[in-house]
Image 1: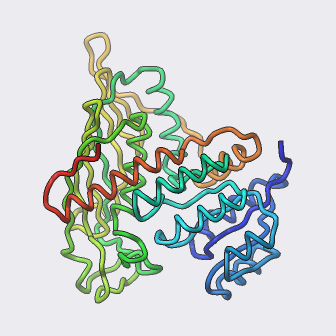
Image 2: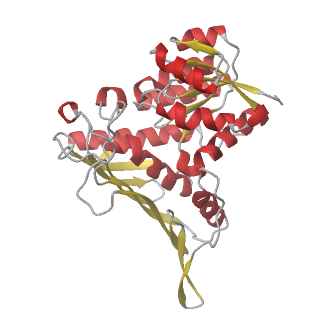
Image 3: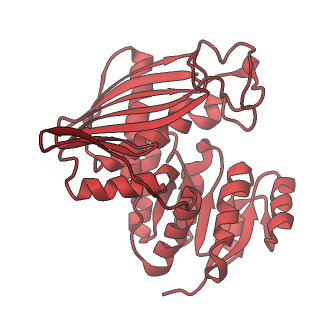
Length: 348
């Protein structure tokens, strides 16, 4: 078992600065953040100075060839996930790639195939899986407290939360809008709690009603004149085992709450709302609600990085796998294709 893992970062944006690097550093002597690459050298140099990272590159291929690394975090726009992940795996590194897996199903499949062939870990930054709420509910589900989970609802909706920074409103670089950015978190959480069933059919619709005009920006002022993504996506997913998910995701919608990230699951022995966690059952001829009185307070991003590091040190498999990433990508791309074609899409 390795005693120290050497980490390289590809992409020097906010997710690297605020999430990946600080949480690697929290792992203490087990981890050394060794190198960072970004096409804008100044961005990489800023993080190098801030976090005392010794090696800076503008070309991640050069970084992979020059510096001996064990682990890579992919923190680029979505368009570059696949190429950077595959290069890192081929260089003999384990990879934590930010969500979503990729832009296309073919890319996600190639990423998974490369991980399998190289024998390296590939996992994704689906951080809501690592919350105390999900950890707790998963234990109840595994103990059959909810029975067969046959239905779920997922919401990732903001009133006016279009990001006013980065490339989040650029379809060419991101592949889509709220569905692929925030909706993917809640969708993955539901799928994880449902044991990632095989998807069968999807039906999706997308809207661009608010993002392409000037308005109040609760997440900064976005570039409404170059807004090329959907501002809302809705859909239904059915699975081969008969289960189904109803999904809603929006960066901007005329709703009361400023922000809602929620998952509800329903089984034949009980159900649950996840954020915050509350379970619903019928026992002894009585309808009861069960609410935890205490949950651990560890940040989900810290938990994600800690678990990934431990997997890299021990060889254990992460709870988010490359194969699950392929299923997730199939559903996302299927919903977008369905919305474009105006009809349900069969995925299997």
